[in-house]
Length: 313
Image (cartoon, rainbow, N blue to C red):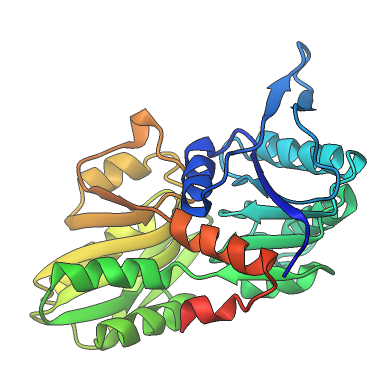
């Protein structure tokens, strides 16, 4: 068990989630201000001492990605210079995660660059959720705890008591995630074989698995423009599915995503609050689940030097 005091601070990406995490842990949110100078530079002011404390900074690197990333880096630097014992960055949504390898000549590997920046700023540990590519954990030379959103999503669907479920992966890369959900729901899985001719453009090819007369639940880690998920829903209904639900951990919802999902055949879109839904992104089909209890328990376990993996058993 750590003898240091536990303190939690938040930058500007998701203060509501930070407050919920603090409520779960029964501690106040740290007093800090993250603002901008007149020229747009980030300014962080810590209004209480962190000397000798184990500090956790809550910040999703969501839109505007670069501003939120810079806020995190400056906050970590401020905490390091203020003599915090450990600085643990909690990044519910890790931006740039989809740039994790070279897919064409001369491509950058930006997920690795971001990892380097976070380490250089002075972070001692990273806690995140559903990394788009799990190998990103290896981009860091500090401990990384990658929490899973599947247990939260599974609990919701179990409470719904849906019948004849089939869990659907929207691509081959999401099969492990779909199988995790399927095991918890005691349901079979299906896979959508798709071709992506260019970024943010998906073309459904075929469905592997039996979906006829079943309630399909499509699961993904990130929904960005909504093209893949809405095309998948149409393909499932064409193959005889009764109805289609969709769920994801990170609702990026950029560009035409909201309009596409709202006008789609999807009955309900189940998401978590790793990325906050602004007022203009709320829509009737959205069901938001909180990750605050999971992240709060993970922080508590890390602080008391207990196993984090037990959260997923």
